[in-house]
Length: 132
Image (tube, rainbow, N blue to C red; front, side, top):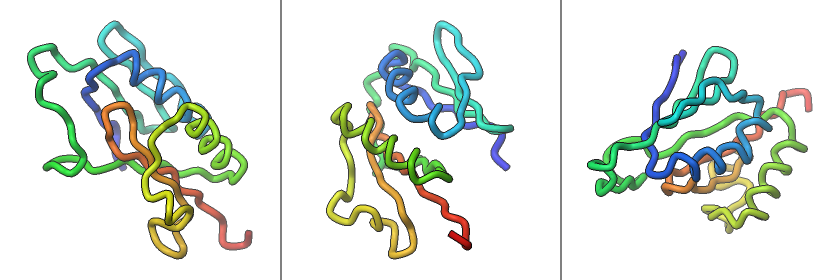
């Protein structure tokens, strides 16, 4: 099990506003909050967002370079899944693979993909129980 993930961000306030759009709907709670960062926790795992130092801002992130490509979040409720998607659409968030929605990840993988403010790819996966 992953204990936590830490992500350095270009603009802490933009990142906080962005992630606050959907992480609480997925059951994440604001866990830590300080001048240079914040984190959200779900059960025993948390995600930390830290303001990158000024001297490293020129090294722009790109998900196709070496390093992390994307984060995928589970959603267990179709209503919440659709609510998140609607909120992101209203905020004019860049979606990916829209022509293949909702099965861009495969015929049995119900999900949508989008980018955060630094263009890190994110995914919301709808997990449906076998008996549904």
